[in-house]
Image (cartoon, rainbow, N blue to C red; front, side):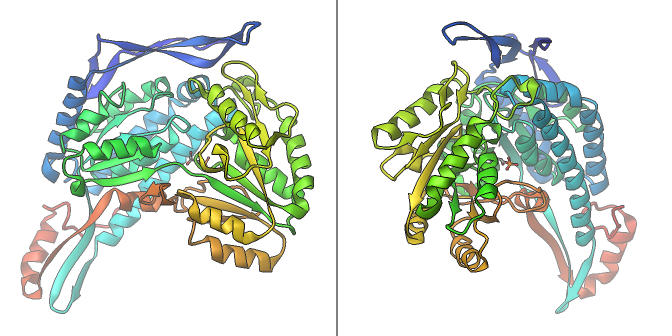
Length: 519
Ligand code: G3H
């Protein structure tokens, strides 16, 4: 098998300059490699990435602040055309890196080959759609209104300096779904990749440098506690954009001395339930639950993480579901199998802990193949019957353990969903319209997306992606993300000022006060 060429990455991007780092480095290993008889994996060495110190993080912050210059910098005051041109330039260079980025995405986080490429392509589409949506927004803002003797022009303006932290499971897509709209709206950004999925971003660093003015995008590599924490503690961050865990976001927000000035845009944990009703099409429910619970080994915030099944169909569902799980292949990501090794350190042990806790409290592992394969691979374990005494009932497993709960009365299900700390999405499985109508009405105010006879997912990206309770702050979608990273701002004057306003408009001197139609 052809292994990738190691990337010895020693740079970071600050103020439009690629700086060389000569301090500490992190060695990066793939979760895949040769396995010895004891199940120990000799992981493939992929290269190294800088572990920058706090001073380097502060340089990035200073550059982002200077480029923003309290909203007076060249980027926040740039014309819409200039911002679109910069983004188009970035996109063009990014597309030329498709193979490098997608291949490293596969090696670093063991996303299978086709989903790695899909993540890249979906991100390219997202950027294209964002540019179009931004143009539409600017066109709306190019009109002046005259009402009650007041002449006004309303647009959306940037918020300031954004600290952007993405997750390891979608290190390209989810990160760029924050970064790109933040930039498009005129903010300046400090971006730090997640702990895993770092090297895949390095082919794009030069693209950011080339496409955007100095200081608009600053990219740092290293630990959150060394970089993100001290940056937040300065109070100079206006927006925390993070997809990940609430422990991290809470700790970061707590360090900001002026939390009221901080906008949070967060995608956090979830425990999305499926409800399989007595009148469900079981084959369809099995297929969707399988995909929903186990695509990318369950490492998706939108994964189905708790399956409630009505007692009358539970035995049937459990038998079909377990057989379907055992028929899945777990293999090298290059082979495109649906299950792959797990990139996070100690993840296999964490999955084993969920299983042993549930088994000790009365559940069984009902599929024959469930459990550890080696120190980076865990074949999905199906646990049944699971109840509220078990950790897996409440906690986000973010991995290949599927808990099944049997229920008699829908009220039990509704009340445990109401008590859950999370509220992102759910899936309902039934062929009966009255069942669906009732369940939809009782679920739409508990979660933010109800999927009917389908698994949960974020896409298509024009749909709003958000959550209640501890699952999210703010809303993302191509359109909503542009709103989230901006604020309404306007100019207003008495109608008697028309001659002056006419002159401002016809001079073309203002990028805000213009009625030009953005083509
Ligand atoms: O990790 C959470 C992602 O937003 C899930 O996105 O539903 O497209 O896999 P997805």
